[in-house]
Amino acid sequence: MQVILIGGFAGAEKKDLLFSIGNELIARSKNVCALVIESIEDNEKTSLKIDPALMVKEMRNIPCTFISDLVAELPEIGRQSSFDHLLVEVPFSLPPGNVKKAIVTSGFKHLSFAPAICMLDVNMLKVNAEMIPKIVKTLILESEIIVAGANPADDKPIAALDRILEVNPDIKVFEHSAGSGGYRIGDFVEMIVNWDNKAL
Image (cartoon, rainbow, N blue to C red; front, side):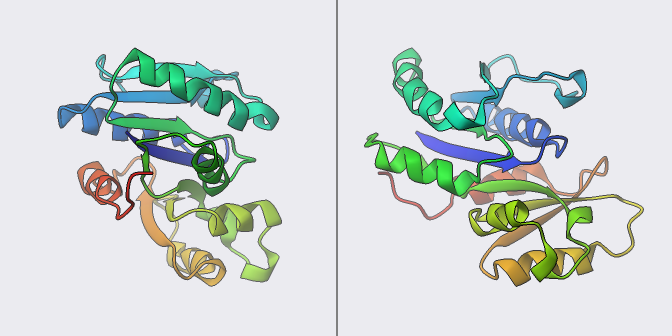
């Protein structure tokens, strides 16, 4: 089973990305489970139509116990079905890379990982890299792909995206303009499912 971890701040369209990936994988005849953080506010929910074949489970939004809750949930998921992919929405205060490390050290067999993904609003990065808040810098350092959302009316998103590369030159940046379909989900899914990461 390939684990796909998606982190980022609340309101960064994490659920939209997660369900878009799930729908695309289902269209490719894959068996997919999605673990999402339960929504407290209606505006945190996705407006995307979710394929009924996608198994969706909600987890409590308690960052301090999220990793232990996730580790406890993994055997149950394995008993329910033989899933090809597990999509996980990660709380904003936890870098996806840290969650990945915790799963790896828990000793689960037959898991592989897609790159750790972080959704980020580039408007938070219109400053020098040295001035980026520590939590944002940690998210960038502990992720392998940044999906950078930008306002379509913003004529200077590239300067903000350069801040990401100043923090982590090895990261892949995927630009996404909200409402414009800025990335093609099929291409994005192709990249993450074929990530060079051997099963553990």
